[in-house]
Image 1 (cartoon, one colour):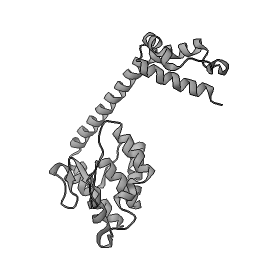
Image 2: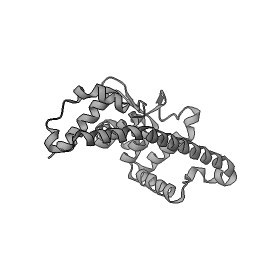
Image 3: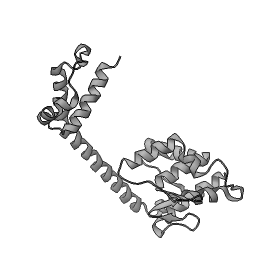
Image 4: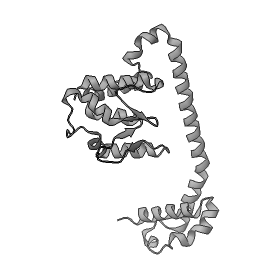
Length: 224
């Protein structure tokens, strides 16, 4: 695997995304072809049976967990075409992850860039250096846009926590008053669905949500 070639391809993807992609990496429905990235990064040393194929990466626990995390946001991060010679198209986040898996050099670049971001609050990519020095206002506007988006996300989360706080407090009071966390009583507690309708209504929860919370509490409090 040619580390420099993998990095160059990632840079190309970022530079030409707005222009519809690049010839060496095909796209479909906003996703990028990992098979093309694998072949292009391998160059003349590419082999169909090597151990850096997309299917090998997708079989790792790291890839599965990352795909699951992205899917939680409601997006479909991966699409695999059927057939023996099927190809894999993924969102850009997974392109980065796959490139880090096949290229230690690129992986290190990402780590160092993130370290600069955490330490200095910003990180400048090498491809943007000249443009940044010539037109800093453009990058300042981009930074302000990112900051505003992060602030909006933070405010949304805080509002959700504040909205749920009375329900959490009421549930905790209900558990305390029921004696559920006393293991002597927990074994004799009613089935969650027997309590869910009336108890959920008093807490402002749906019967199903209450039943799940009740079952979790039973498991937690009766664990050895």
